[in-house]
Image 1 (cartoon, helix red, strand yellow):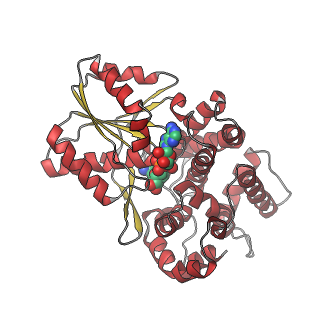
Image 2 (cartoon, helix red, strand yellow):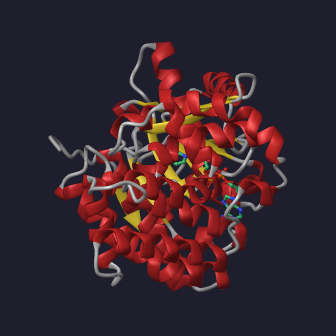
Image 3 (tube, protein in one colour):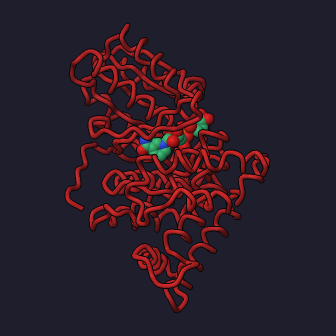
Length: 373
Ligand code: NAD
């Protein structure tokens, strides 16, 4: 690891959105999905800004796995309003849309990007602190993780109250996204002491609080820790990047419209087994790293390999308890149809940005095998 940059100012805790009033905003463009508009949250932020004399406009056309088309529309409507600030309100889809809109808008106008404040309402992607924006091309059935340090939001507002309405299934999916971010950052070829510290803390918090947050969405202690864990895992992978679990999940999600966190979760046990070389002789570097993080969670079984087997078993048990399936066939995907797409998806995963920092350099056939499992 050669550098560690943290450009986002993070506000946290209940009612931290009141700090928006200190930003001297004149015109705010609020980017959210229809749920956030209907729930009144976007209007609430507009109301808060109005008290400080700021004008607002709401763009609520964000869709899950945001598309190039939505980004284009967002840029057009932004051009008619010319805001000095963009507020992204929602899950990763809203935040990624806002990042891409801001970035391309500034590039087209050849001027500085507007101030970008991200307000996550799911505890999953960590997008509020990362330089990634994942944009989908439905025609190509592909998801592209765009990456540019200039896309990192200026500020993030982590108010756990905003996550209280997230239903159990989405809490589970997004929580597994946090775990995947932290584990992939931890074994990445670009990991270092700084990203490890964030990844380790995030893993500990998911281990302790995810199940509680799924079982009782009103448990604000669990919600708050999951929200902070999501952001910390974001800091970790913004520095260390990710690995093939994400590459495979991007291609899988784009083809079969499986939510991002759930795609990651289904693949995660198989990716750990592959990276750790569990079915081969000898020890990979990743094996030792997974064993280290397992030990940190109190999992130990004699040898490193036995310990990592045990870690995988415990991840599977966690998934079962929070209602995440182990196979895509449990989500209505036909085995035969899936088989027809494996080569295409593996090819896309091999080209994905996240593959470059995976601890083991995969061959196309190995990625196909992981899908097969
Ligand atoms: P999402 O933003 O697509 O939201 C999922 C669903 O949850 C939506 O229907 C939304 O309306 C609903 N929702 C959001 N907040 C809610 C709330 N408070 N109460 C009730 N419902 C709520 O899901 P996500 O998992 O947060 O984001 C996924 C997207 O983020 C994917 O496109 C993924 O590829 C991308 N991603 C980006 C990064 C990054 O660093 N930029 C990292 C990981 C994933």
